[in-house]
Every structure is written in structure tokens, then in C-alpha cells.
Image 1 (cartoon, rainbow, N blue to C red):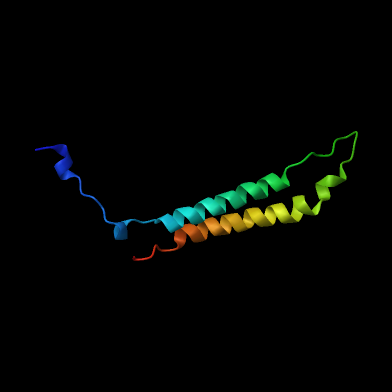
Image 2 (cartoon, helix red, strand yellow; image 1 turned 45 degrees about the vertical axis):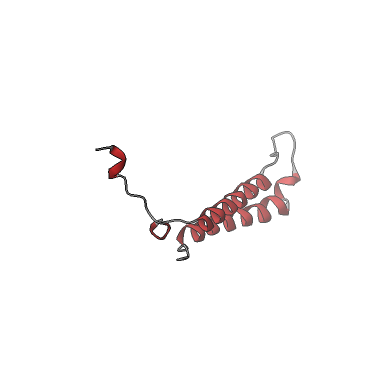
Length: 84
């Protein structure tokens, strides 16, 4: 008896995540990375003040995109795959 006889293949309906879920997770992950990259930048030091730390890109747009990415990741994981 071969060891391959005991392996049972799962059909697509019993898989917990489908291709659509993985695509959604990839898009959400990209949004998270883009959000964190938008928040990057130089900081102020004792000798020099950098007013760029208060830019809209760093305090509004970046965190908003990262938040959307985290919410999207949860949605992409929670959505049930279609029964096709």
C-alpha cells in the first residue's frame, strides 16, 4: 500500500479561502504599505524645526489609507468564498 492512497484531495467548496479572498488581502496589504510609506519623513531635531511633520499627507492621508487597508484585510478574510 502506498502512502499516497491515504491522501484525500479537497474539493474547491471546502477550501476556507478562495482566489477572491487572496486578491482582496493583497490589495489591502498594499494599502497598508502605501499608508505607512506616506507617513514616512524627516523629523524635527533640537537644532532645527521641520514643519513637514504637520503635513496633511503625514497626519491625514497616510493613516487613513493604512486604516482602510486594515479594515479591508478583515473584510477580505471574513467574506465567504462563492459556491461556484
